[in-house]
Length: 246
Image (cartoon, rainbow, N blue to C red; front, top):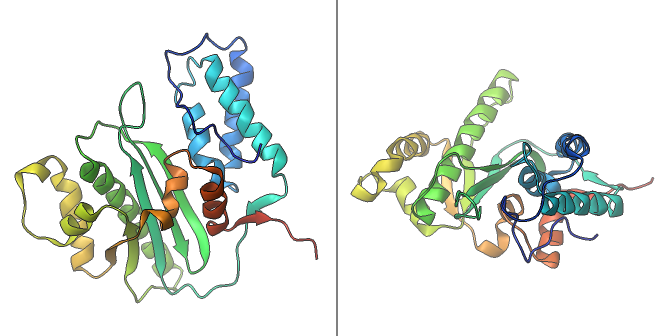
């Protein structure tokens, strides 16, 4: 398989019959979780097949086997790291609003680059329901800002402090306005803690939240199924390449 997942349908807990060999399913899913340490391109789909590990259905097993076929066709691929001046952290964050057909919860994802290298990524279903795309996206921004704060402190301890603000790219205009506008609104009271947290980092100059067009939103690869060509383009942008034989 040249792609990791079928883009035409989403997995549901009510579809299909229970998996006949539960031990095999858990073993394969667990092994794929370890593989995501060097293959960020499968992080989203592995998260999907692990959502209902306690009672998976046959469509989940079919999706899991498709991931294995995709890995089989890309055995020479892996995450590449290159010499790069670590002057700035650059991140992309996105969310799939109400993407789960069973719970209507959203999936958040982000990726963080240090220089030219991908060093952190994330794909996870949000713990609570959200009422708007702005709320979903803002929760995702708060997650990546927390990760950036941890990475900046780690670099400080390693005596490589960052002097410049870290960039957070998001494709939701409302989130950009909320991160800079000091005025509170009734519609944002339910995410007030996230708003104050992000604004504090923006005010301190540690983070800048900027807009990026959806066609360049690399975090999409961690939140949803993508068409083949877009998936391949974003995979390359994450520095997941075939190994070179010298």
